[in-house]
Length: 364
Image (cartoon, rainbow, N blue to C red; front, side, top):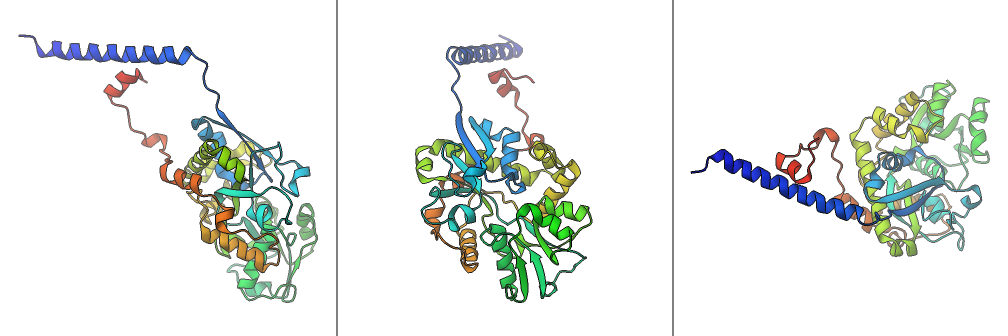
C-alpha cells in the first residue's frame, strides 16, 4: 500500500509539470510573433484644466495602457480654438459643450457628439474683497462683477445663478464682460469691480495673496451640468468604437481612483500636469473640488444635466445651435464602462492561492 505523502508528491509534480508546459507554450507564442501594436487615440484639450483630473490620473496611472491603448493628449493649437476644428490635430476633443455645441455659429466647426462626461459642475467661484460668510445673494445687489465673455460657459452659469436668485442683470447687478481673461486678476487687484468670477487655480491664488475671499461656488448655485466632456465627430465614434470604448474605460477607472484616494495622493499623481502649482496649493484645490462634488464616479452624461446646460445657454440668449440630447450625446461607451469597470485598491487585492501561483508560476 502506497503512503499518502507519495500521492501528494505525485500530484504536486504533475501540477508543476503542467504549469511548466503551459508556461512554455505561452512563452513560445509570445516570442514567436511580433507583439500587437496598441490602438492610438489623439485627445486635444481646449485648455489644461483641473476639471480634467480623471483624465490625467488615467494617463499617469496607466489605466489607458491597461486597455492596450496609447493616448496622446495635447492642448489644441490656438488657430483651431475658435471653431474647434480637430482636423489632423486630434481624434477626440476634451472641452465644454457650450462652446463645442450650443454657442458656435451654425455651419462652423465639426459636428461633435459628447460620449463621456468628466465633471458635473462648472468650476468657477465668486470672490469678494471682504469676508462674506455666510453668503447671501443680496450682497451682490447694486454691485459689479468682473466676469467672462457673454458666450463662455462660466459666464452663462454666473448669469443663471443671478437669475435664479431674482437679480436683474445689468440693472441690479453689473457684469463687466469686456476684459480679456488674462487681465481680470490684475484689474480686480487694482480696484475694478466689487466681485470677480474665477476658476481654479486663480481663485485659490487670489485668496492666498490676500486680494479676495471666496463668496460662493457657482457650480452648486445652479443645477448640475456636464461641465467637461469627451467629444468626437459621429463618424469617428462609429468607425472607431473599439478605441472609444477603451478610452472611456480608462477614464472611468481614473474617476473611480480619484473618488477612492485622498487629495494628497491625487495631487502627487497629477503634479506633472500642473508644473506651475506647488504641491500644497494643488492639494488644497483638489480637496475643495472633491468636497463640492465636482467629479462623479461614472462617465455617463445624464439627460437632465445636458438639458440644464442647454436651457441655461438659451436663457442667457447665447443658444445659436440647439441640439437634442439624443443627437448631442452618445451613451453606449459610458454606460458599458460604468457597468463593467472596477477599481480595486492594491491593499484590497486578494492574495493568490498556491494553486493559482503554480498555474502561473508566479511566486512573488
